[in-house]
Length: 266
Length: 124
Image 1 (cartoon, helix red, strand yellow):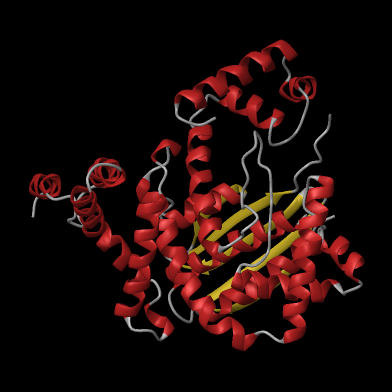
Image 2: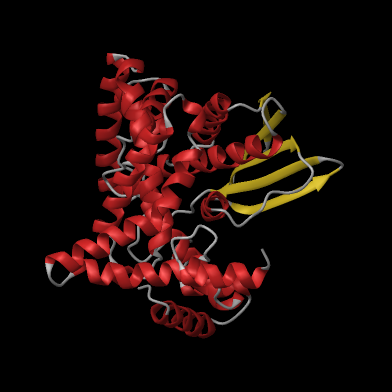
């Protein structure tokens, strides 16, 4: 099939797996708006079409787990539940692509499915107790100091070895029970207090959109922005590092923020 | 001071956990806060999974970890004809979590290098 033919077919049917992402995203946006308001029948039809539109995506993700010993149909079922969750949970004002968000939610659902199955059997009671204690210490220390503690600090607080703390964190990651707050500047966080893999991936997906937007900034503006937010430098310190004046840093940072605002981020 | 810790294993999904565990231990030794430790663990998991996919089942995967005052480093090497396609979701996540990400290929061996920089304390 020649390229023109495939593009024509893709444009006609966004559910076709060969259809380009942009067409599917555009159609999804329209459907998400329809699914959010209006009379019940139209909303339901929009939801159904959204499901059809993204079924290929669910199957694609489910295939990545085909060697885990579970029938594909079961994994697709789990993935479809994740897709429905994404459809219901997507916030159109956020500015990120639905496709990215859906990918993260579907993937998270399937991963959580596997974790739910193996976790209870695998983890000893001692480790489960450690997880609870470590979780509490992380939460309290983060709240008290504004940044996450180190493994050493957690071990000292709980009179555990660092290995025990790491073991607990490892097991907890499998079940996603740890709260991990990491401010990345301007109020955004990498992972919120829930710490479920669904949320982690969702936030990673959101953060990717911000990262892309930041990457598109002119070099100097990007540097000025990152040094004064993520790196926590004062404008004077950033100016020293960049070899320019504090006034320039101030202006570049303001321009960078304006660009990001116009691109849909705050 | 930089130390290198090496881990090699055949390309199999079960072995990703080994790299994850070691990544966490290295990050702990470097005294990274636990949120950065989790970032490193997640990123290493993605890089190694990608390596397993590209290298093919049973191929030798080698990981080298280093730590220094500025953070932790990772080099993953494996046999493959070309560097990985950098446009996938996994790579976007890797680039979001790690810095100085480089992929090179020399004589049939692909190397992926990256670092996680220690977050500097916020100054007033």
